[in-house]
Length: 244
Image 1: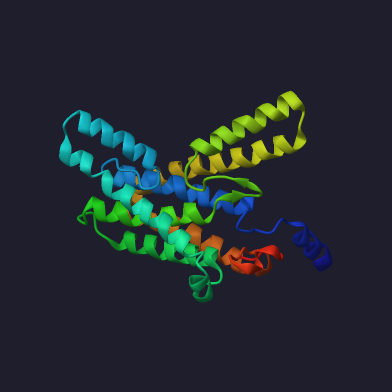
Image 2: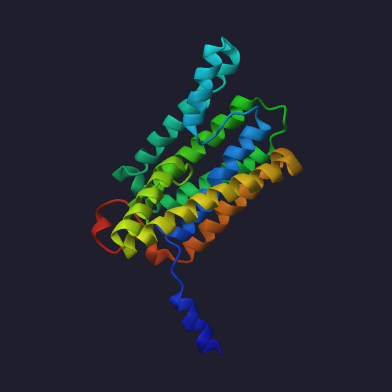
């Protein structure tokens, strides 16, 4: 019996930085965070900067200057997060943090845990800036699903990829395209599930609901830690078997 269980465990696909399993967890977190900030922070998105730009344009067109300006800080924080993710690839930084994926997940989970301790009186901009920055680092660090580029916290590009792959699978009877489409659909559904859970939990628990998203990231970190040989690492080891 023990041998059977061991063999079954060996056949399970490892959770890597590019696996669908991790993509599901990160997608759920992305949906959760957008729902959390939209519900608890006056309709401001943390990860979807497309939404913030649209709302900024609407408010400016309506001459609601102060409300429009509220959508600018998350956009700036998002840009800074991208720059931070790129900085993690610098050789000097790699020496300090050789496994950037684990670093990103740990820092993001801690940041979200801290946000959950802040009372509703904390300015919306402070919360959304913190979340937008953390989410941006995540998005910029996890950009590959299996072997295809994707977004771990937004769905527009993923939806396009899933639709294109589905078309290729149906018209060309391409099995690999069908699997690709299925993988991306799983990520999209995970994002939707995260948004659903984020809405219900925020309405129920208030600002502390974000601890659920932090817990999901910690779970992902623990599972990645259990599979160190499959984790990606930046730098000259990239040609060897990938680590993270």
